[in-house]
Length: 163
Image (tube, rainbow, N blue to C red):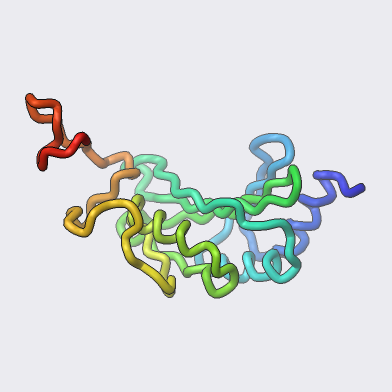
């Protein structure tokens, strides 16, 4: 039986020397810090080796003062979680799409673009997923600087919705 530690070691070995640093924020998990230009080179060997599966892509906003946004790619193999963490400039958050390597991530990328404003360059389907087409450009609801519009006295949002 393969241990979780052995699975994590295998995942790190597959990524090779393409990451900047690593840490283990909790048992059964390793985070690899990856430069945006190395993302595809890190994902490709994991996908080709069928090392688990990409369970989620998460956006993270550490705050306006940081000047950064982060994108986390969570690969899971049994109890082992290998996360590729990519830091991007807040004013130009562009990352290559991984859809060419893992086509099923299209929905994750669409959510990331819509909610955090991270551009997944080369994604095959950039349409909005959750918010309406008349949503203001440049307003991203999961960023920490997003301000929720106040409710009207009737308890409904600006356009009569139940925001």
